Image 1 (cartoon, rainbow, N blue to C red):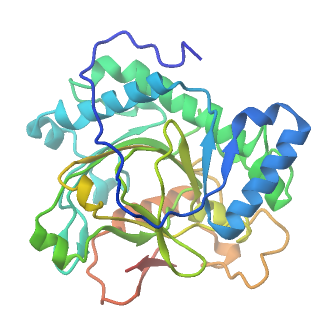
Image 2 (image 1 turned 90 degrees about the vertical axis):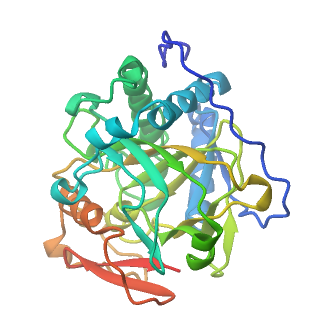
Image 3 (image 1 turned 135 degrees about the vertical axis):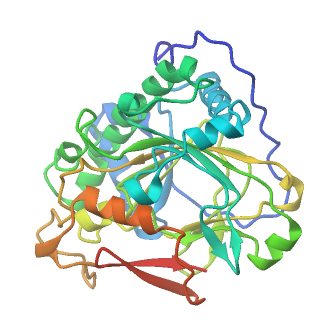
Length: 363
């Protein structure tokens, strides 16, 4: 794996804060060891693990994914350049035209989303399509784009595809032909799959009180699979089947995997998109910015999100008419354009209609 990230440009080192020492209620997530996919016995064991994870949590860890801790650290070094090494003027110049294009490619700047009680977000993110040549990048990032492109392809072919194809974990759980999902996720086809560098900045205490310590309200991702590279600031929570919010614990050099709406639709509810949110970190980590690296996978633009299974999960109802199922492009563009732009009546579950589909936000 030494040549996966062709590091040949110096980069300032990003030093994350220490892990929290606070007493935290952690989510007890299963772990998928990708080194086990080389045997049939290993594949069977991992299928059982993913099946359990989807039924009980909707999230799981992945370890032994092939990148070393040193390569992992360099990815975060490069990610920080997108924020600490790019001027405000360049960020504005490379800002994504989110409402117009229905795409996040480029920068989402702070205070674009409404969070709660008039408080807007303090989140910046920079998004790179899996085809990194689709648009120009800020000058400060250009020397690192060969590494970024290599890392993006690694996420797609060495992590996403093992979940979809070599190990066939999701296909095995759902009971469809083993190539079903991977055929919908072609690296060279047009699609909105992207790599995201993301930075949460601390807020004022006044805003924290007004937003009830919520940095990003409860939601489900709208793609198929989300790959989060674990980082030490404790802020991500998942909503358990018992309706209790619990924190996701940092595991060094591990990945945190969850299913999004699109894979829930394709699987007829057998794989369920999990509700999660981001909140203010515990006291010993407050004041530090939270740097994240994500890979948001989606199918090819033209793929229909109609179920690929013959029978829906018992009790599961699609959020759209199966005969009029949206394509991935239609669904993603609608979600991207609408997200965080509507001030909804405050309820425990807030609902809005996007392209005829009910979208829920959780307070």
